[in-house]
Length: 72
Image (tube, rainbow, N blue to C red; front, side):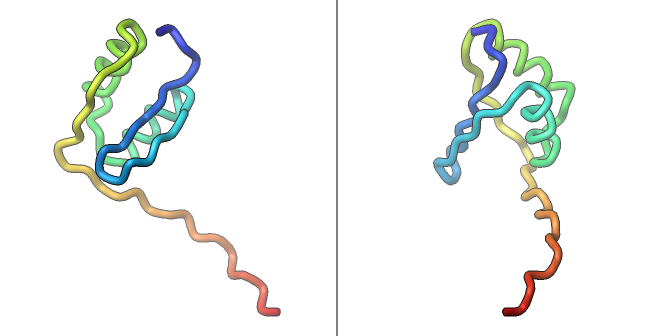
């Protein structure tokens, strides 16, 4: 409760991530979450320790392209 970070546990692949508040909002935005509803859910989680959030139409975020690896 009242922590500086959130722990996101994904049920689809079992991964978990520990993110600060703004990083958490960006994570949900990148995965297709409705930020108005997400803000309410995060407030609930912050006050009551946990919340279950389901994204109706999840999307896989785009992976940023790195510069080409040098050829050795």
